[in-house]
Every structure is written in structure tokens, then in C-alpha cells.
Image 1 (tube, rainbow, N blue to C red):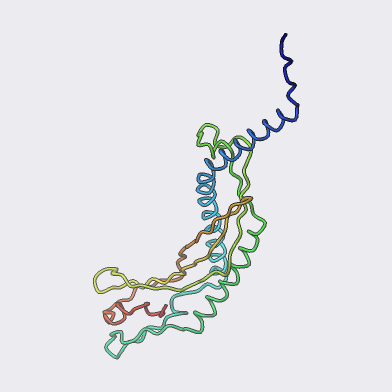
Image 2: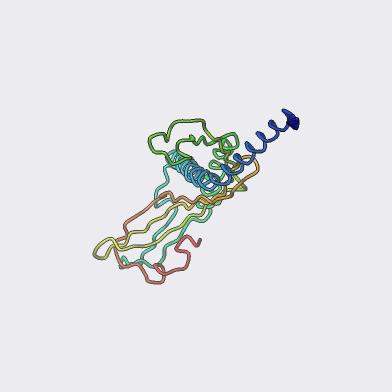
Length: 214
């Protein structure tokens, strides 16, 4: 007599299929997660930098800031530079205004998502723009810090260039379900410059923090 074969419930096959699907999901997730965050970080930094630069440049264009508006050069009777004085009140006001404007622009990123095509995620160059997209959310964290920095550099015989720029720093978070990563964004935007004719006292050139004292 033949033994009667046991009937395997259909639920067993369904459960087996779901377990295999889940295992494949975790395998793909673990394999692609580093690539996903790398691509998302590059795109997020580019987007944040572009927004910060654009906001600052638009604000500076409206104010039309010139070098003489923020730094006064004092000379003696023989035309030698004896003092370079920064207008700290105007500098602080400018820094605060730009900080508020940039923060306002970055708030719009709360609803911003970065789409990464599956082809790009898998590293297939011919299909980089094809396939379903993984959406990564970009979230600004905290407040932006704006410093006004300056430095001196040689510009020719008996000439010194004084450069002043804005140094912007902020933190962002990119997030997908169950995972998140924090990264920093830094960008520098030129503010003003001038060519100073004559000897600049070494004490000013080597002054820690520059003339603006940051």
C-alpha cells in the first residue's frame, strides 16, 4: 500500500513566499542604502548650496554693499595706513538680515523631496534616468550661521587686496523610512573687496580673525 501524501496547506506557500520577499527586501535595502544616502547627500548639498547662494546674492544686489560701507581706512599726513576700522553695527545688521532671509528660503525645504531613479541607484549609466524613483526627504535642522570673514593678499607692487566674504554654515537631515542621516553644508559668498595702495601694517595683515574680528 502506498502512503497517502500529506496535503500542504496553501497558507504555507503564501507564508514562504512572503518570507522570501521580505528577505529579498532586507537584502536590497542593506545593499543599496549606502549608495542611496551617498547620491542623496550629493544632491541635497547641491540644492541647499544653490538656495543659500541665490538668496544671499539677491539680498546683496538690493543693498548694493560696497567696501567703503563696512571698512574705513585711516591714513596719516604722509598717506600711510595707520588704522582700518570695521563698521561693526552695519556688519552685524547685514549678517542678521541675511541669516533671516536664508532661513526663510530654507524653510521651503521641509516639503522638498529628492527623487533618485532606480537606474542611477543601481549604477547603470545607460538607465540612470529610468525606473521608479526613491524619494528622500530633506529637512533643515536648527539655524543657519553667517560669519563675515576677511583676509589680505598681495595684489602687486605696494598694493594689497582686502577680501571680505560671507561664510554660511547649516545642518540638514535626509530621511527615508526607518533611516536618517545628518550632514553639514558650507558655502562662501563674496561680499566686497578693495585694492589698498600703500603699505598695510603687518599687525593688521596678521591680525587673528582679520579686521572684522570673526
